[in-house]
Length: 289
Image 1 (spheres, rainbow, N blue to C red):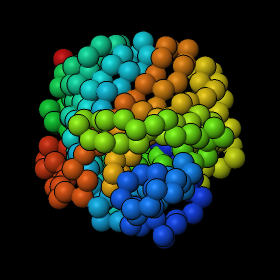
Image 2: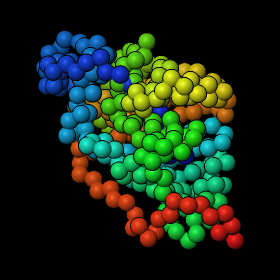
Image 3: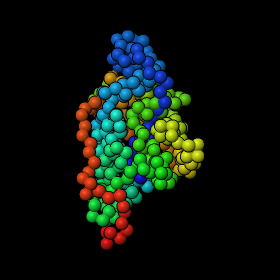
Image 4: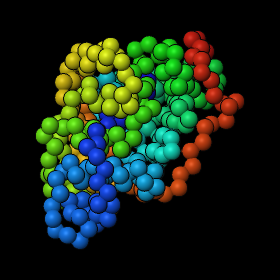
């Protein structure tokens, strides 16, 4: 469940070190006011440092996710907090695909303190909650007890993903390159790109906590789905923070693309769980009549 909720969570990166001298960068690709060019890896390492600062603690997000024939296309808008802990509040609209039959044409997601809350705007799931508005998934408990079964590794990825991990993952690419200067949402950016190993991505996002067996199961699942590599594009603004990330891959279900735009970095956000009396963690077959 958490995998498609955070589909953008197919994220990028392993930092090759934070370069302190880059803290005063006036734009990606240069040091200060100097015209000395930096390598793509050096620029992305500096972005990791930026993202770990207060300026990189929160962002407004807007994403389009095309997830093959099963899930179809979904559009997501909302806010996310990355430090000191990951939290988000997003609205997701399902434009097409089989997933809309189960989830309805829209649903809302809140992630707070390792607990994910989902409110369905219709579909089969909304009929199984016994009159409650929100369905709760405790990611902490599922990861600790492994009661999530095959979802365990995916939930670990969901919980530990953030833009810092995205940039670190892109740094693992064997063909990382600077594409050039481009404008994103009216903002001047520098475009970087590279290809990555999806299994390595999942291990990176899980904070290194996946066992060899779990990594192998994930790799096998990815191969079964026809996903053997992913292409990542990253656009950094003049402050060295992501303005857009895009992940694309081919699969047995069709093309998969996650295109995310980020803005308002560092602005205050308020993310709170729904009222307890509106929440259930149990699905009740037949509750919908």
